[in-house]
Length: 291
Length: 277
Image (tube, rainbow over all chains, first blue to last red; front, side, top):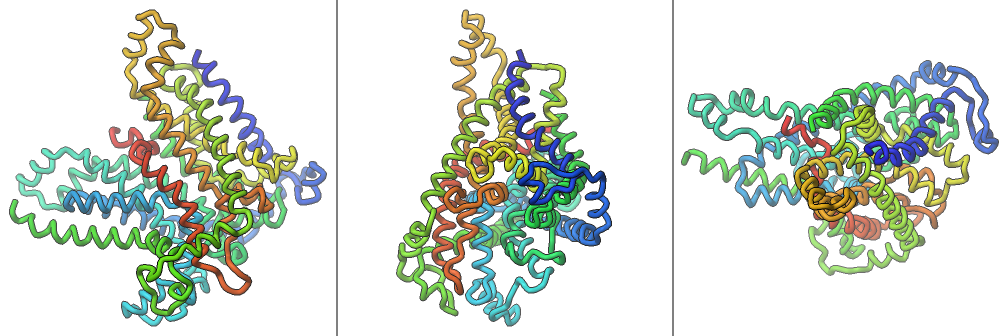
């Protein structure tokens, strides 16, 4: 009986996912460009694509840039998310409802829409960001272009991504916080424990599993992010000096119609992500087994 | 505890500032959409539109392919959700109610696929679909969306199905119902909210999808609405920001409404069990 229930989905996934995955491996071992795409036939060249990618300094620079980018984004998201959750515990009910409603609204914004709003807010001529920074005397940002240097470009991409990711983290951590036993916190306080000790010894142990999952999810998402950097910096402004992994493989593989090379980069990227997913998958597997 | 009165005021203030900062971009989008061009391109911006106008909404809707692309998106999303829901419901049932060999492997696949960065599969999916002349067709995009919707739906529905006590199902069968009868009369009404929440969430992810839509659909008349918006940059020299923000607002509205409806039910799907663990 269970096999009959699972069979349809296994067949469908096998066809629409298994076949492309098989093709991914095959493509990575072939010379496959526009000509081969029309012919529907590539030329087997062994591990040449992998060799050429691994000997390309662009690959290693992109990998390093993506790691730095991921670390920065995940750290900001997690720290700010936890702080917001801790704040939600301390405010009055109406403020909590207000902030939660705002967070949910932000959470629901489609990424492509958020990108357009960001490019309007950071616009050189009439962007509100330049106006506000100048008015607040942070400096003279009149007609400041945020997209001139790689660092500046990625500060903007980071604000966009962290803004979009905060609601999920904050609301989930808040939900976990409400599971911290009240009596335990009070007992610790009566025993004279300071706020910091209560946080470290009572609250944090309850939060740890949630934080672990949220961090691994954020790492996986930010490492593979595509839409925000690609569109905010601009499809025409993607160069070897500002690639992230996803953009790199998209431009080199699809954009330059070098599908074999693109497939090799994809496999390398998927392998890195798979290694990072182990923590999350194992945790979820335990959840699935428990019930 | 009177010591705690004053801090709450301070925290409330921080909360309100946080709310203002987080919501500002959304507010700015809507506000810009209703402003006149004079206000939008003034060097001293106004917070609210002085004379609210629908001009930019008209410009956005009148742009080529708006309605065609909305129609394309709705077709793709509805078919994806319908197929995903039917197929994944049975698989979720198997996961929630039976133990079987290969169950563990199946769970690993279901969770693992959701972790794959979509970009990693763009190249092979494009080449395979090109091979079968499915590029630039909605059917090709639906197939791709299914690969990502199916695992998600299985995992979330499983969560809803587990919540249903076995005794209810058994009681129905003792009453002389067949297994199918028990399923239709007892299980289905109980799982209906879960089905709605799951399908709405699958709806939103497909509606928002960008990279595959952009790669697989190359002409304006077959695009989806996110691709339409991403190409939306007014005239040759200047960007019509009012119209871009009006278009952005229009595209967000269905998503925001649906999201608000189901957020509570689905929010913890990804971390389900972690809290209890």
